[in-house]
Length: 283
Ligand code: 5RP
Image 1: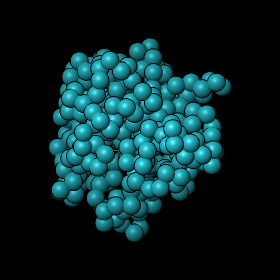
Image 2 (image 1 turned 60 degrees about the horizontal axis):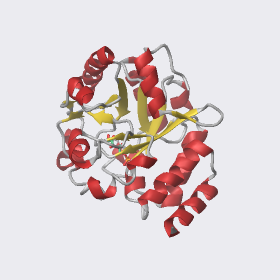
Image 3 (image 1 turned 180 degrees about the vertical axis):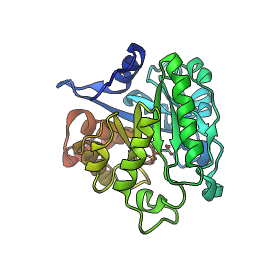
Image 4 (image 1 turned 60 degrees about the vertical axis):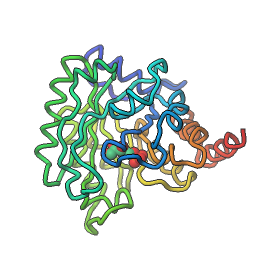
């Protein structure tokens, strides 16, 4: 993994998230639970105290927004937190999804003992400039405290279909080209980690981004398919996943997070990981 020339604090926070395996390679399984900040009570996140708290010990990091963190997750569990700090939108107004601002301050993230903050950047949307500026402002503030910035290549309403299998979509949208373009802009404007989606022609995305990359899982698919997605992304050189629905909406979320982790950290194949999933489900 490329640690760049970051400060001691940022480097140390990175290794808290990206755990070394036996060969010394650094990878991560982040558990994404920030959906309610714009989805409301997402399936599986209605009461995170019951559904998410049991998964947290299996995650290398969690990425909630403030409400879920303070009211639903146990501060005695020492899993690093990457706090979602942007918002201002809602799924009920899909066309306005890109209209985000910084909602939670960096000081608040420090008080909550986050190791980093996350921000969505909507390239090629109506609010491209505004969301790049959100990233820039956050990066400047976060640097004062040595906090990491995770920049998300968020796709607005017009691009969603091909990437996430939801929404209206644009038939001419080329995901590889888009994520290579968006991810590099996000890196250059201050992100220490880029979150994107795994897609066809991913080599151009990896080649053009030097910070660690994590991939979101997208819409819920059958468990074996989600394990294949994880395997393919790791083979393509990403440092990990920041996966939500394909873990917490799985038939057995505790088994699923361990199966995903076996691919990310232990190099298990899809069949081996699926076998592990089935075995853990029975226990
Ligand atoms: C939205 C987000 C989501 O929380 C995250 O990408 C969702 O994860 P998943 O697709 O795996 O459920 O960051 O911008």
